[in-house]
Length: 364
Image (tube, rainbow, N blue to C red):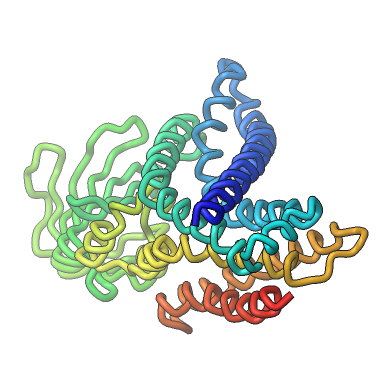
């Protein structure tokens, strides 16, 4: 029992050090790549120094690293299993009475723990940083004529329409209608001109049909009442409105449930948010599947003189997996598959593939 504990402690420590090293490499690469993009974005702003692109990079890269972490786990697993094979540690472990499957258990357990920590602790931090990133970068955006958001106070849309700046508010979306619509019209100098109120607006096309319209001046006095129909030309239509919500990376795991309820109340599609919720629940198992896959490509295959061919094959396999993961997610977004099935399908397939390889590896 003591010998098993010491071996497991050694394996766990070695695996975590490899994960930490791989993470540092990927994080630094992400910073180098992103800082060039941020510098290119701010190149036309003469009053912006290098500290702003650096700050934006530090705000954005943690979220990018979070998305890349399954790939980090795959590379770390390959590195770990190749290490214990090349140094013949795997032989000493077998002599002590442990099988190949026992060796896989330690990194598998750590993968699940890391996945839970990422979702419950790191994800809220990266969401906050991305939100801060968008706020700062939004202040430098040259084209801010169009903006839309969903809040607890309703649906808000800002757009430039025929040399006017319009701010539109609606209580909710019902089928193809925006309900309780109010359009605040401003001139180019942002001076308030008039307010248009409608009971509903058919937004099936970009030419909205406003129903039961009342027009008021800038002092709140009625200009025209009981207008049965009124045409309003917008840059938004039903399709754009239904898929309209903020960057999902700004929503932490703990707020996803509230976001789903808010979107349902406003009449919006919740498929992408529910898909993100399912991906968050599946994240620890996705990391676990990456560990299993790395074990299949190392412990399950006879090691030859050049072992890096297996690393190459594993990387190609991971690319295929990520594309398949995106494909299954797309099927969920387009309602070809239920959201839950589209998220979990790729993970289940990886587990089925890995289980066959692990059975073979355990018999070696």
